[in-house]
Length: 363
Image (cartoon, rainbow, N blue to C red; front, side, top):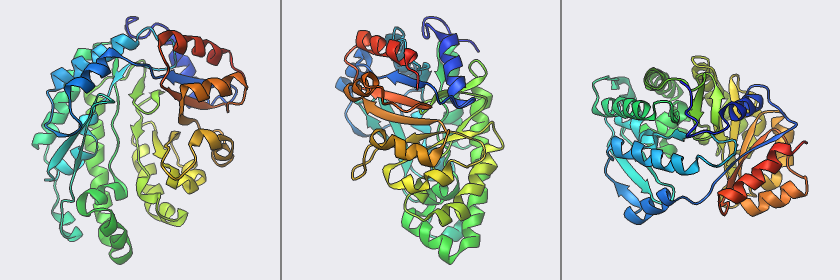
């Protein structure tokens, strides 16, 4: 599938730059996308309340993203136009095995996400779990993918969604605290649940790529914009509160196993998980790490040099406010091999002026 020029005015240039970052791991340049105010988000925030909501009409959702992407079409940054299917993130997986899916509206972001409460009272019941392709949530998921892909029709892409496998899936079944206890008290049972989660996630993400064509040979991503090949989005959140040894025992193998079924994957690390950076950077098939900022920890942007000592030439993605980014850009102290998600640019003109300097920047 090819982009329409209505949605990406410098498509070949942008995709080549992203390929250089994620495939060639270019360290001599910087990359950026610009967040600017849009009327589409403003109107959505005025019309919707935050908090729990019903599953939305997917036809209305894709029209919303179409309007949003049209507004962004004149921004000459390193972003790729995509519609996310956030409605089916965490909640989908629990819903596929009998969980009650709850949807959450985030008006200021224009997004609707999902989750489930713990499903099982005893992890031993994971042996009874089965996947049924006729499950109502799976049918809704596939239907939304088809609607989004058909409506996009080459104008924009559809973003992959997060994997909920490994310990993340056991979180869905019995909650986080019980999960940590189970891997100590009943490790074989935990491994059975992990094996089931692997098969479930394969079905979910193979369905994604069956319904959503690759865009210029790559995958659109609400984390990384676009990456060559079929790329999945992993989470190492359960290990943020564990030692590296627990990650090596319980995290690495399931992640590398599912990455090998595709063309690799990406992940994110929060502020309280930065002790994992060196280990996570060596995951086979990993293409990039998004660095989250959390209360009680210095923003990743402020400790980028320290982080890069742990991650080497692994492509990194980090958020930073427009003013702080512009100051660091002017003073030539931005680390290379990093994709900067620049927040709160005042308008398109300021964003494009900043991007001219980004493209000229050399480390």
